[in-house]
Length: 190
Image 1: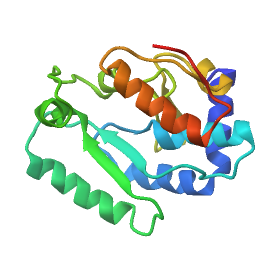
Image 2: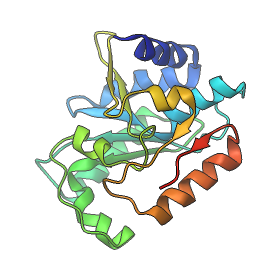
Image 3: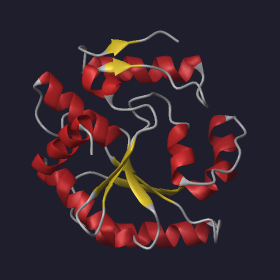
Image 4: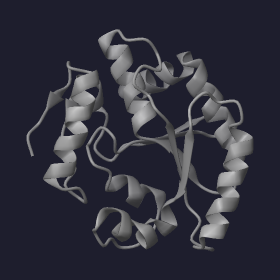
């Protein structure tokens, strides 16, 4: 684990809510999964800007991957299991099967996408370099961190577009929303 990854996991270990979620998420096995994006990124931003833990975090995004059954019913079963696993958590937990995103994405966002072949392929397409982040705590206590663009932008409070999937309009809307809560962020233009 490199220095930035160590710094990241130390932040998570100090955050009692996140650690509770990381431990409960282990119950999603055998599916590969990650806790992703917002809650992780915003935890770092809060620490870097002197804000209280949890500031600005509206939900917990957890992604998993199961290509064996792409039905909504199968995903709904995992969501129901998630409701049990995360019962009592103060924030909503949004659990999504990344193997079936291509089935609903065009209707919701007006853009056709290819099926993701892995969780990592899904994270590779997320809207910014900092939000392209997935982390899980393995059963053996080791951390698995997937950050295809590294962690430098995250710790430097830099928002940079990942143009793999989003449009300039979506990027601008997201960065404006985040900048209103964390004015210290530096936004790299599209």
